[in-house]
Structure formats: structure tokens, C-alpha cells
Image 1 (cartoon, rainbow, N blue to C red):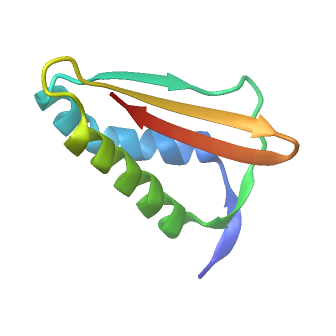
Image 2 (image 1 turned 30 degrees about the vertical axis):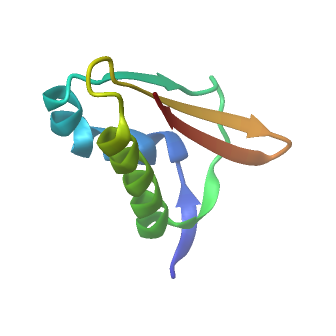
Length: 88
């Protein structure tokens, strides 16, 4: 495990970019919400990237086939970063 400062917005955008073709193929509406100012987080970038990738992949897999939508929302609450990934 390698702890380092991570820009969570960039990490999430990279994961979504990697999955963008699959999102387009399944005709899924994707909405993304980040606060204007977001603190950096400390952790293992590869592990965090894998977690986000797995969560978004599962959302794609189990999304409604006719009107699929996925929402990625990042919140900063009392010095903690919360990432919500929801599908319909």
C-alpha cells in the first residue's frame, strides 16, 4: 500500500473515462456532481481507483436496461470525502 495525496475528482474522472465506452454502449445517462472546492485525500491511488471502478462497473451491470442512469456524487462533510454512486 502506497499512501499519497490524491485528487479524488481526477481519480473519478479517469475511472469514468475508462468506462465511458461501456456507458455509451448501454445508453446510460451519467450525471456527476462535485463541490466547487474539494480537499485532497490520502490513500493508495490504485486501490481507491479499483474501488470506484468496481462500484461504477456494478452500477452499469445492474442499471435499468431501458432507461439507465447512474449518478456519481462527491460530498465533503466535516473534513471527510463521501462518494455516492447510485443507479436506477
